[in-house]
Length: 310
Ligand code: SF4
Image 1 (cartoon, rainbow, N blue to C red):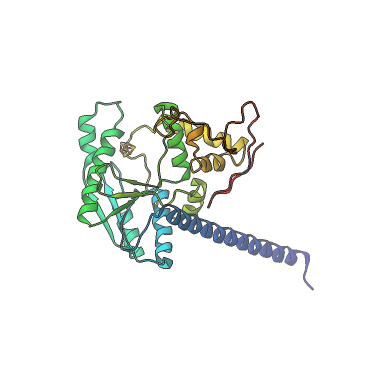
Image 2: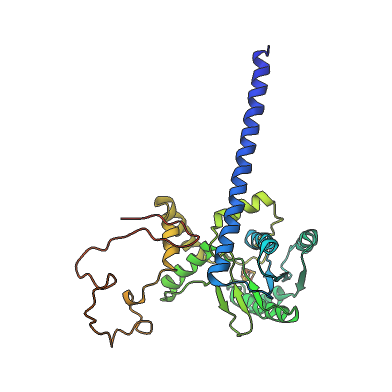
């Protein structure tokens, strides 16, 4: 017969095993969700086609690691053939650990290219102390990445922006730019040469954080350039997180709204011909209900879980 102290050991072991099994289940669910959401975005927006050669832009942050990781899983089971080339631009920021990404990518066995260009010195040289360096820095980076994509014969550039980045951009444009404009999952590059895709469009940042912890990606800090974090983006990010905390599901609803636009109920005469609008004599649920209160029904969109209101 077991003594009381032996039983305590057995109980602790059982509790540990149950905890480990729960973590494994949760991780498995997370992996399935990441793959499902990326697959859904690829299918909804036709992000990847047979014969594509995709340059996967790697910064060394959790998002780009997560993107490459899930893209490789998708590639293994994809119904079409496409190629991935991981690319990192080493901008020679002080303290950038140049060996981290090559070591990681070599270990994965994925095709990769590290481009080393000292844009940091150029930016430091041109921008007076205390002024923001980001616009020149990102312009230089864009030009270099286009050239590298051309040299590597890639037709698409995959960026690691996720659902929360896209929503933040939408609010930044509205609050500070006076535009209803977000960050699309697919857009032709500004020089017209490449298709820019965002395969993490449906993925929540919190899931990428958990995935990065689980996979123990060798994250490179994003503060090496010494530039201040974009204050406006920070504010909008905090606002969204605060809303979500107080009203769970709000992020999902707002994100669903980006895919559910009703131009006739906005005020852009370029999208809807208000001037020549004619009475049709046909009843329509989308017609104006005059003084009736709007009812909010549950939205239903692929890949997105939406909480109903009202
Ligand atoms: S945060 Fe730093 S690396 Fe990023 S765009 Fe700004 S200056 Fe460049």
